[in-house]
Image 1 (cartoon, one colour):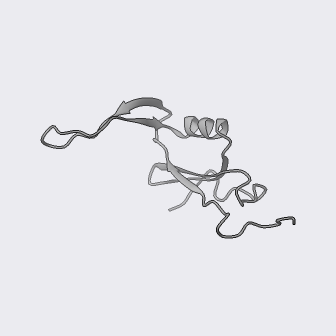
Image 2 (tube, one colour):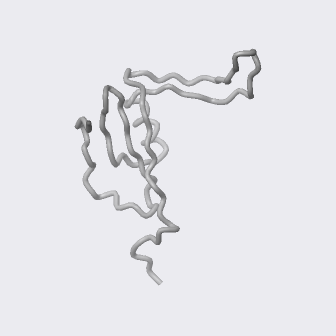
Length: 99
C-alpha cells in the first residue's frame, strides 16, 4: 500500500521559535533560582539569533517554513522533513513584518 498523504495522527505540527534580535550564538548551562536562593537542577540553554538558529536547524535536518518579525522580535517556523509536510510550498511571509 502506498501512502499518499499523512493522517492527522502522523502529521507533525510545525515548531515555532523566537530568536534573539541580535546576531548571537551563546550556549551555556543555566538554573532557575527563587527569591530565597533555592534552585533547581541545571539544564542546557541557548540564546541564538536567527542566523545561528537557522544554521542549527539546517544541521539537524529541519526545514524553514516561515520567518517574520513582530515588534522587533524575530520568529521562525520549522518543520521536520518527511513528517507529513509538503516542503515544496512557498515560505509564508519570509522577510516580512507581520503586525
